[in-house]
Image 1 (cartoon, rainbow, N blue to C red):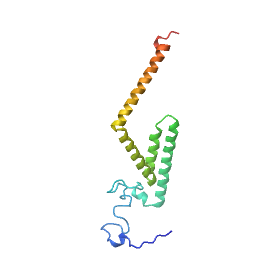
Image 2: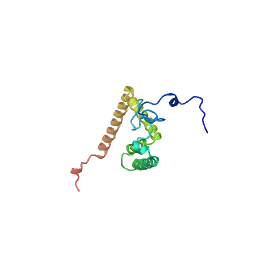
Image 3: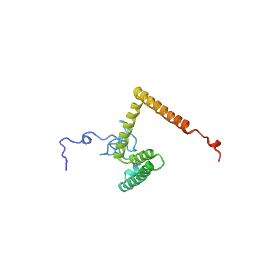
Length: 165
C-alpha cells in the first residue's frame, strides 16, 4: 500500500542547519539522539547500539541477533528459576532489559511493567491498605502462635540437645 501526501515534507521547506547531514533529522533519529541517549522529551525508543554499528546494516543485524540470543538465554534461565531455586522474575526482567537495549517492543513492555509496579507501590503505601495489611499480618501471626502453642501443649517440646537415645 502506498501513501500519498498532499502536503510537502517539513524538511523540504526548512533549510538544513550548519554542520548537519541533508535529509537526516537534527539530533539523531526520531527515537532520540544518534548516540542512543534520551532526547529532550525523555527516553527515546529504538536501538542503543553504538553509532558505527547502526550505520552498517549487516553489522547492526548481527548486533540485533546477538542481543536477542543473549536476552533469550537470560529469559529462559529466569523461566527455569520459576520452578527451580533462584530469583526467576528478577532474571526474566533482566532479560527483558537486555532486549530493551535494541528492540522497541521490549522497551514498551518494560515501560508498561514499570508503570504497573509504580501503581502497585503507590496502592500499597495507601494508609488504608497498609492498615489492612498490618491487621491481617497480626491476625496471621496470632493464629500461627496459637497453633504452635496447641502443638506444644499436646505433644510437648523436646529440644534437640535434651533428646536421649
